[in-house]
Amino acid sequence: MDIKFLFLKLFWKKLTLIDQENAVKTKNNGCPKCGSPLHVANYDRLPRGGPNFLIDQKILRFSLCCSKAGCRRRVMPPSVRFLGRNIYWGAIFLIASIMKKKLNSLQSKATENIFAISRQTLQRWGHFWKNKFPKSRFWKRSKGLFSEMISVFPKGLFDFYHKFNKSTESTVIALLKFLSDLKLSDFSS
Ligand SMILES: [Zn+2]
Image 1 (cartoon, rainbow, N blue to C red):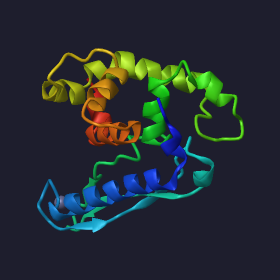
Image 2: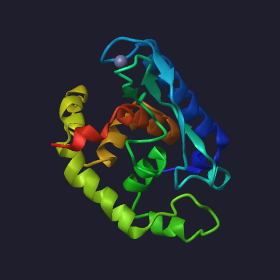
Image 3: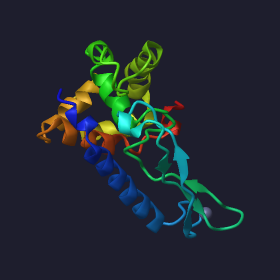
Image 4: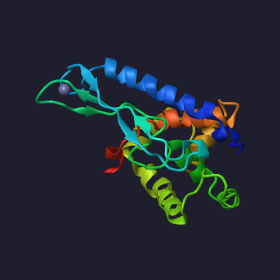
């Protein structure tokens, strides 16, 4: 897997643009509960695991809030940068989960922040993909979109998207778009 694109600012900019588009689309739809206009209610996050130029950078999580008194519902547009409440970049969560065996050699290059992830965190992510994701409501309602059986996560998803995308970068972006609507409530059952 060629992950050089992770060290280029352009990749992270592309993700920001996708999130901006998602925020505009979500805002245009109005409040899903009462139909009133939505106000911008963005906030800062400090995602972990990015390249050195993103260390300690506050990143805006696009967020919206219903303008109607008495409703004020918070609406989170889908995000390819933040998956649920995970404190790591979604792209890193995904790629590290796919290449966990190769990660040790990457982590030995201590000069780069990317993949500075503890073994416990990687184990937790492994548990999530193996045990929680296949049982999630998100996967139950999404699996019909795939023309083949996928049973290994997230590698099987990556391999599927790779057939339609030439580069690793565009495959990762396609997969992040697919996962962008994943919500914590999808894992409550
Ligand atoms: Zn509302």
